[in-house]
Length: 178
Image (cartoon, rainbow, N blue to C red):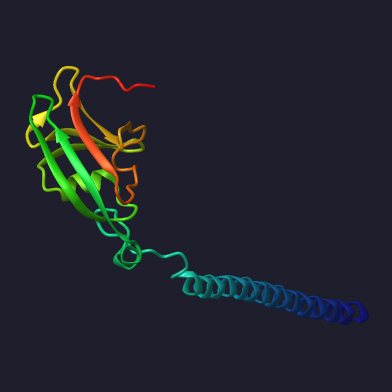
């Protein structure tokens, strides 16, 4: 009889212990889950606050044509540049005192002069002029440009102009002098 009572007591204690261990495990898992969600929520809040704080840092509006935004253009000075287009057949066209902003490119000068352009963009290299006013590159005659009498060593979209520059676009087979 004592053995039977002892068996019932030990079975009861074991059942209570097992139930408590399940509750403790469940409670421990619950606490761990709450901690994980707390950390994830904290990271999310930090990211949102950081994004809101840095949203306007270094922002310069860019127009679809990739030129610098209006605010930055207003700070640049107006410059006057001369453009000459030599078609390589004896015909030339001059554009005196073209108004630009300091830092505008040779390509911008050509576009603002009103000549009809055919061009092709090569990513990483720049823009290649294929024709000016319907006069195309042919054979080994290509459109090339000089600034202040010196052959340009960069593309037209990358050459920044200064006040008083004289730009010559010429369709020629000449090789630049080095």
